[in-house]
Length: 366
Image 1: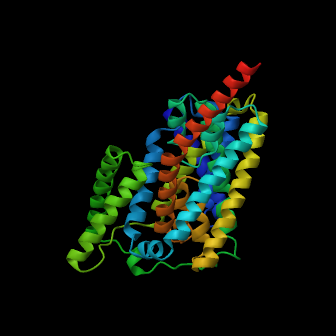
Image 2: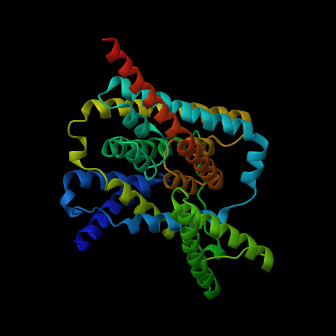
């Protein structure tokens, strides 16, 4: 069975290779994702009952965390300091839009209230199903809708923001420092890998969302900053572009492998309404991102990825590949998920309790 899983990854990555040859910056991730999803539909036996190994996704997120940790600087703090009110408003609007999306799903499909709201809340694939299970919502439907939302976001937003009108694609030529290899660079890479794992352990202990990404990113950023200040120059790791390609493939394969035919049986109406509400949510967040871009002078691409209702890892990967302000994207995505996880579940419970009381009163009156 292991050989089949590696064959699945190899075959899926061919789709990434082909799409990357078109010049699309995020081609490796999109192509791999689409191919993996198609294979999962047509040949699910290749993956067996357990799907892809969880460590594939963890390794991909850890690589991305190390990449982001090496890039973190004070510019993101200055942006927050200058425009924190506007950013806070946009985050609150994303919560309002997700509530409207959930209400739309609840009213126009056969899905119950809690499942509808948890399914459309942009709180992440790992967080929302777990919270939904705690309150008795349909975890399978929540996971499916969450997966579809992330899938649509990854397919739509990178393609739009990488269009020439929004993103002037300038080929970057690798200089001697990027291609050179020294033993101290390899040693520093090993140090960052160990630090990243330590950051994951701490992030898991502190219950970070996506601890493999956020924990490793924060730990690497701190160590990188302190060490660079101590030695008087930036500490360079051996970090070729192929490492980020591997990260894209691992993350994309892990997401694409979740799709199965049986997931869609009997859910035609629910998925149709969820699809429409997700598209509406994406369009609304595009409008918010454009407003932020116009008011702050921030690149539209960065604003769109920061406010996109997708996952942290997926949007961060896209930001890195498209050379957007990845640290700002991650910061806003993290704030959004924290806000969603803290604010929305209590609201959902209150709405559910209100609906139950309403039904009880209606039955009593009859």
